[in-house]
Amino acid sequence: MRMLVCGVGILALGFGLAGSAVAGETFEEVSKKIAAAAEKVKSFSSKSKTVIEMKQEGFSMSSTTDTTYEMVRKGDSYLMRTETRSRSETSIMGQTTKQESTMLMIMDGEYSYTLTETDTVKLAQKRKIKDPKSHVDALEGWSDTADMKVLPDSSVDGHAVWVIEMTPKGGDQGKTVMSYHKESGQMIKMVSYTPDGKPMSTMTSTDIKVNERISPERFVFKAPPGVTVEEIG
Image 1 (spheres, rainbow, N blue to C red):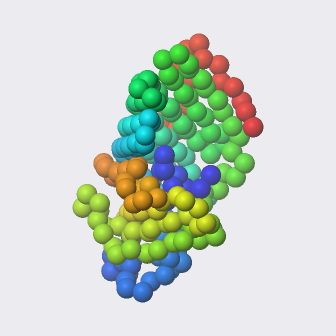
Image 2 (cartoon, rainbow, N blue to C red; image 1 turned 30 degrees about the vertical axis):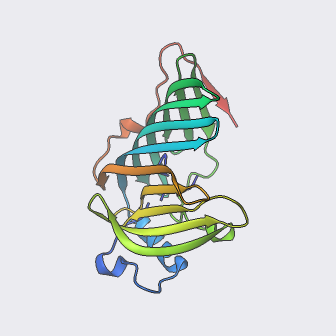
């Protein structure tokens, strides 16, 4: 699994003036800066909110997802914890359905665990991590399937960011604009657009903390009473 440079947020550190995107910089140059910054991160945590709005004739969908993300580097690998709470409302030809769910995901360096809960289901699974080493270059290979463009440096809630625009090649998908935190290299904002340029999904991070201590207990999975953990993969 690549580090979210995501959900869960999968990381990069800033260098002041040396880390700023300047006029004429290529995607490859900025991508390397993001990866180099990520290499220096020891821990990262944030909260984020993702809002999705989709509308067309006879159909509409809206959802809000709140996520807490924590990461600690451990040697060449990393420990990760994400907690999400989602609420959605879907309307099809006047019939409306509402759903709520929560999900906990923990990576302890050896296994990844997920606990999913809805009104009717509580499911716990674990999977062996095939490649425990951390991957700091989250943008590696993206230019093979999308046109990547460096936009002017900006800020998100007072945090300096590098900004990358991604447009999938050979399809009818809209662009996605991603903002990478210069102090941590995490993607702290992402806006996806419809093919006609209307915002469809927005994720923004807050409460960002870099290289602060996170208790190791946060990365120990404990199944709720009565729930059996299923090993998959």
